[in-house]
Image 1: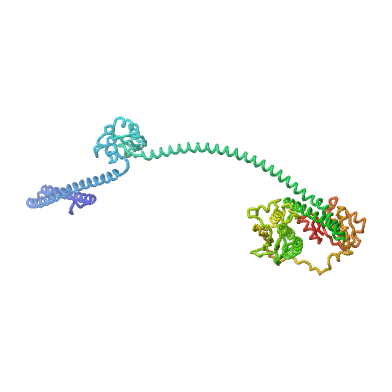
Image 2: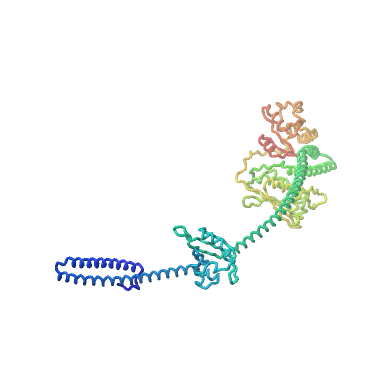
Length: 616
């Protein structure tokens, strides 16, 4: 047999089973031999043979008995080895359990049904300050103080009754250490349901509880802070709401005041725009009369007086026209009619017009032509440039004024240079304010109202053009307006043959004048007759019909004012007259209305438009 010290428990168990089987077999053989001996003696046929046979059987019995004794000895040895192996296995198992439980961060113990300790781990013994193994065999009451036992007694009773119990409380050991423990008692039941012991598990939850308490305190503190902050925010919110309400009421009052002011301003601007026709009518008539007088051969003194009257009327017209313009711009009456056009059409006319004005003031106008095609409203752009040119001449004592263009990416910059007094840099922005005027260079020169650049800025805003200005004090200034180039060519204008001078064309022309103002009619008659025209003036269509057969009589031109009496207008009057004529009369419409709708309507009808005040 191999060395038993190296055999496992299973191998020892198998060897024990084999020896028991062999011993049982030998026992059966021995019983059989004894039975044969006894049966041979009984038969007694041959004493010697029986003796020999008995001797043989006795030897066999002895051999079998020795073998049986040896087997019994081996069986005992195997039983001993098996017992030792079991003991070693149990010891190793207990050591492993002890190793595990001693290293678990919890107090572990086992109490039997009599509440006697049968197991405690290292942590359990260290907490209760007992040497290793000393608590085993002691009862729960003996191992702890009476006070501690009474605290546990009720929970232990519930566990022995078969209930799993978990509870927690603070306890202090004999060394004065205080910890908060979470205890669990689990009953050990047999298959029959009988409770034969209690498993004890105790965990230290001091840190967790302290953390929970700290969190609770922090939460309470936070809640308190939230309540305080909420109260502060509520107070601030209430205050803010009151301020918002007060501000809202103030803004409402301001809006109402602004609305009233805007309404008053709008009423004013609408009034000025609406009455511009009536305001310009007498001035227009006076201009017609003075123009007629200037063209007559009068004595020098009379001509000088007439020229002074004409200049005064022109100044009044300019001032009144400027006021009307600014009012119309504020009222939104003036709208842009943006179309492509060749810039030279405008620039050439302006250069010719202001060259004479500059010469009359002892200045030189230098013009640089431009062939670019731009997109803008030619009438509004002309008003911008006229204002810039007028200002340049007004504020230049000597030297010259330059009108020209510079091409730039996507557009053209139309510039007006002068060698005048210049503007200080800190005053450049103020120059575009209403009623802001510079110092004139001649004592006899009109200073204007200071609305020219304000009108320039407002019209530029309508057109979407940018105004730029640079100035050098004592040296001069340059004002520029940036106009976009057109991607399309302007509409072709019908070619006009070179004609004789205008006055020669007018001699003998038959002209009808339709205006509801008698002074205008008289002024137009005087002016046109002075040019050699045959003139018929009428205050209404009915008045014209009484004087001529307006449906059949020959005529070369019909001049009509747009604003007539009884809610009638010149466009409708011309349409009614031409509707029954075989050959429609060419019409010249005169109006103080600058609206694009009217301009477009007259253009589509093929009429010519002239704005008041009329300058013959």
